[in-house]
Image (cartoon, rainbow, N blue to C red; front, side, top):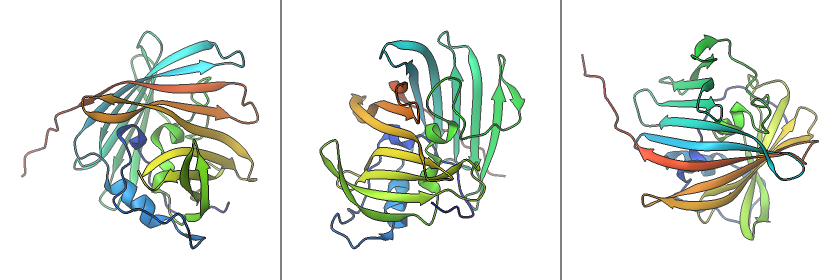
Length: 256
């Protein structure tokens, strides 16, 4: 997978549901540009601020939980400017690290990183590196790749019994050097991302994300469980389990 210039960091929008307006054909032609499909996904982001609370459950090869963390997400894609904030906490809810993202007028992201208790400003880490001893990174948690460009739809394949389009996205030039690109499986009939894999600069698979289950919270269908696995150590996995989704009030600044 080749790298290219320019990228915007995303948000964990998959938790709020990715409902695509126009259905892409499963029959080809292949390859074809993936941007219309991704643009439709992004255009369907909720227009209200959301707070999402979840748990990160680390499981070793035995399948038994060995470590657990909490994660909070404050998401407002339609604010001025759009913002997304992610806080990683220990099992007792003490803060460990925080990533804040704001998008400028041209869509360029500005990122700030904090760590410790209390949270203190710190240099931006490698966004591709695993979070603590889990199997996901900041890029995985924020689904940055949905804002990457120059992707292509390569074909169709069954995932969990549903026909999905396969999308390859090369990593942009300012992504971590160890990241070569990602491959997505999107169900065009419901517009849902069901699976994603990331690859290193040599084209070797390094991580997989799979949607496992859904649940209904306050009349909104959301993803309940997402499983992450690292390679070449697939025996361990990390489950992101959504506990709660809440609407928040947006506070607009007065016009000058």
